[in-house]
Length: 109
Length: 115
Image (cartoon, rainbow over all chains, first blue to last red):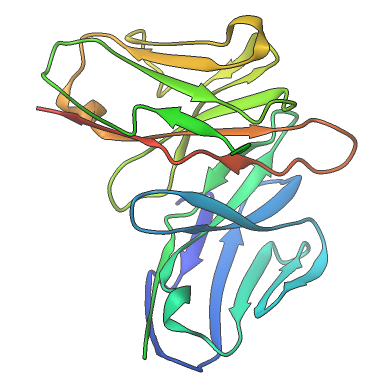
């Protein structure tokens, strides 16, 4: 069993829909990261959080430390949101990241 | 551009050849990480540096792999006697260690194809 599990693996939505991507982890963490990866490989950090909730524009990330679960929400989805969204957890003093396999999101116009 | 840069962006090599990748982190960042990502998978940790010291290496990093960060600035990752299984995207990330949480900034990656 992977230390970081994401669901769903693939998600197709219509423009304007509310989207939720889930992440569960089984190890102790210092922080949880949500990352966005576009075709071609570049990774952009969306959120880093250790408790509660954060919001940037149409994106919201929440974490429940007791349940070892995090969600990424996208409100009013748009085709430009189409990308792979990756959940990763930081571990130990090194803060090395352990990644989930990613969720491929496609938003159709 | 003050982000993390990686060179080359793409590398095609024949099995058995040696390859070297370079990562230039954000200038004030003291931590540098190397990750590897194969098709359809999330990235996996390879190694990291704090300043010039290599502090941890994954078991994924066989003896054919070596990484350096002379003077605590740029880093190089060398793969000797490449194998087809080395084909992957090699990602570099850097962060600044201060009090609190440490966000990592990623470079665009070097895509290696071993034929």
